[in-house]
Length: 235
Image 1 (cartoon, rainbow, N blue to C red):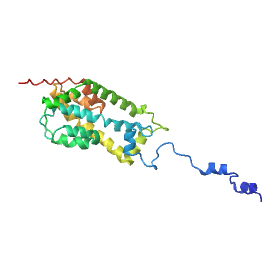
Image 2 (spheres, rainbow, N blue to C red; image 1 turned 30 degrees about the vertical axis):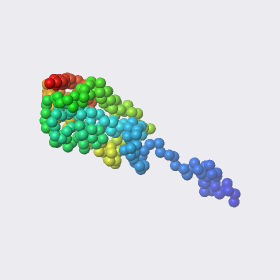
Image 3 (tube, helix red, strand yellow; image 1 turned 180 degrees about the vertical axis):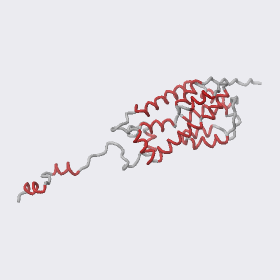
Image 4 (cartoon, rainbow, N blue to C red; image 1 turned 180 degrees about the horizontal axis):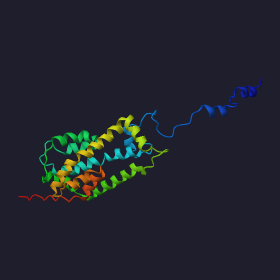
């Protein structure tokens, strides 16, 4: 019996080219759950990767804004605080609430400005409206990214379902999401203190700024009255 007859009888491919087309599976175009998840180093190297859900990208990048918010709220009233504020503010950029939480628990309520000479250069930074404006614009972009501006979909990192899958199955998205949630809740007390420091406190304004995570605190930094620290007269 000829090769063609055998192939016809058993419905087998008659050439190596056809066999290769049947046997080789198509390569994946995204990151299914069966593949190793991207590492923190991968995300840090490309914090706007289209392969990840835009909601997670917005959350992860917002963790760079909230430490700036906390620093801008806490440092103007850091005089004679024990422990000092700056190591925890710096650490929060890397470790989020894991670094900021202990300081919030140990600090004293001080609704007055820090007029010490060592802190005046810090005041020039945190009272400057340019960083506050950049933070507010960045927060608006992250909202745009989270609601679909990042192009999430079938060919991208996906939408809400893809984010929830990451949240349930991977440690970094889970911890990052909870970290941002806790930072957004506990910012109320430092903001209240800062409002009192500037004579700008009202319960309604505090609720409005805290009630919109990330965007609200960044907007507060932009709108709050500037705190003027008078230079001490030299004797």
